[in-house]
Image (cartoon, rainbow, N blue to C red; front, side, top):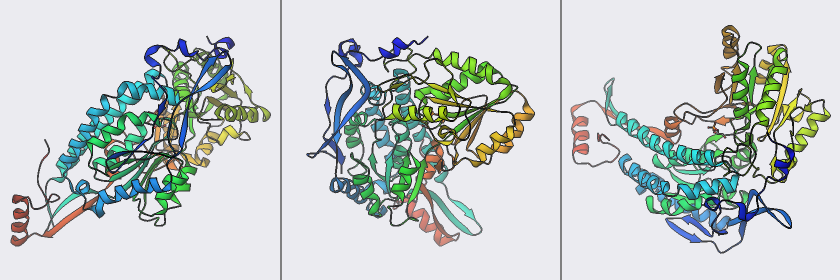
Length: 541
Ligand code: G3H
């Protein structure tokens, strides 16, 4: 059980941090990757503050663990130029290379990436406060994603390695890249979610400018050499700095063809509108969400509580797929709250590396103030914090606050909290919940908890045209990665999954000819003499 003293004494003194998890030194990163070269930035640096505070006789101070380049517009544009040159209007070495060659580069990168597991996992803990188990999971899941992407591409290529004869026309259909892709990921999965767009973009033959998330930046550094050595110059370029001066300037050139962005609506809209050719720009976006958990009156309450706790509080609720509002039938609300609050009080707060830790400090500056304001607003409109220690704050740490009864006049009813505040709304008429989902600006996922098949079936039909995934008696989540991950309304553009991502970053091109002797002879010659890398029947085993 958590008590107040545990929260007050949450942060460690430097010497009590286990040696294995101490950062060896302050990391002053000056390198960025452009055109196959690691270049030293000579301008200003951006300090990287950890959510972890360090205790000293002077009090608590947020650890400053390093710094990264605050690149300017000119430096950012040099990365774009390199990507544009490497693409060379689609005639560059990378977009014209064979699938097998591109797979080889990605495999070589993966081998080098695996060697950096400890360094990356440690930085995930220090930069975003993700616990050890989840940081390791993020790393391993990303490696698996790359392996699965390679296998999916092999399969896709096998299907394209044949000709089709249709109505007197002979044709070969292959998927080809779009051009230059700008890839930006979110701070809650700075490795995994970024790589779920970056790797498909690259492997399909696009060239890339990649800007790491706002937190979780230093952890890309151990991978820079691997990027440099595994891909031809200019194919992958990594830049750092403030959004407006860097990616804003790239968008304004109109030379970005694909905008792969996982973050907020506002961030995506601000950048998209800078592009002068909106129809040229393809957006692949994963954005805000306010996924509801809906607890019906006939329910396996223990399961519902356990799924709602992980659903709302894994990584302190900082997941786009987190359950961000819970509707509970009035008749079972007391039972739910009693069990839910008890489960929350069993979650262990602490430092990311401590065994069994579930609740950790938050990386966003001002986040605990923001959450406290959400709680104060809900209180002002009639809700209470109903769990012990709910909202207890110590610097960057905020103990989960369960708010009840929440209603539509409160900010937390519609606003995405992206943190450990759990609004619980009692209802008697399921129509109120259906209306909430229909009227919401978001449409990523939801969870229905109930045992009555008729009730659950009715809700599935009510929601199937509102959200991208309906979870039955289970929390919302992205995985398994072979399943489609998308959203409706303001929650996403495009679908990601291992195979879908390959399709999103490519377009089909068809080579067609009349099905006659002359065409057959010419196509046969091109293939036999290997006169085209596009037109071929090579089969990847
Ligand atoms: O932040 C959004 C992530 O895509 C969620 O992934 O459901 O596996 O945590 P997850």
